[in-house]
Amino acid sequence: MRPPVALSCGEPAGIGPEIAVRAWQALRGDCPFVWIGDPRHLPAGTPVAELGDPAEAAAASAFAFPVLPHPFAAPNTPGQPDPANARGVITAIERAVALTQSGLACAVCTAPIHKKALIDGANFAYPGHTEFLAALGGVDRVVMMLASDQLRVVPTTIHIALSEVPHRLTPDLLRETIGITARGLRDRFGIAHPRLAVAGLNPHAGEGGAMGREEVDWIAPLLVQIPQEGFTLTGPHPADTMFHAAARARYDAAICMYHDQALIPIKTLDFDRGVNVTLGLPFIRTSPDHGTAFDIAGQGKANPSSLIEALKLAQTMAGAP
Image (cartoon, rainbow, N blue to C red; front, top):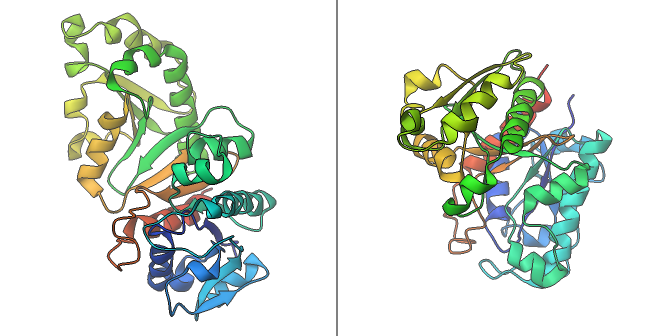
């Protein structure tokens, strides 16, 4: 039997603990995972199976929530992050990665973290989850993919101001993003010959230079120069016509130029079930496509759908040929 997914607990004051339990209730043994966190942080009344070995997760899931106990410094108060728990959040992620790299888990799935609490409590030195995981994996460059049953999108530039995109979007960055995405689709998703569609930067992909020169000056020439060894590459395409159903059927992933160009279509099509996938790591990593949601934490309102899909996708990727 394949090892379970290692689910790091994330910020205990957010919705992570409650959606983890609801994901277990929905999946049980169909998608074995083991939660790494402090059992004190789980919703009251949760039946807990404290495990000594991740291999016990599948059997335990039939009757209780499978936990690898990971003591934290303090209890949790929903909606109120405590910097005292920052070190626990960080080491739970490290433990999930170590289990996956050793083969005791098949993939890492991460519940949302709160960066300010990590900085305040542990001087967290990374811009976010993804950069920390890249450091743990010993790689310099990774790619963020948002995936659902309807669409996969990759933003080439991510959390920067729109005014900075033309300066930060370089031929090297786009080339690396395309290469990592093609390899990820092949190696992690089992797509033998991936099809990539690249969006233009400007409206109508620049319309021959009338609405911007980047497509004419370097994006289109770069796409022609990239060796298409084992994958198909098209573009630059006008972004406003890339995401209707007939267009989506012609590619396996869309390479977009900036954050909202990628995330608006997938969140419009499948807001609750989108999954964040990090490509380029030496291990599989997925996460739900939402944050800690402090405003509803502990109220039983949180939707577990994205976490459920993240756990299922992690198992699917682990079994890809």
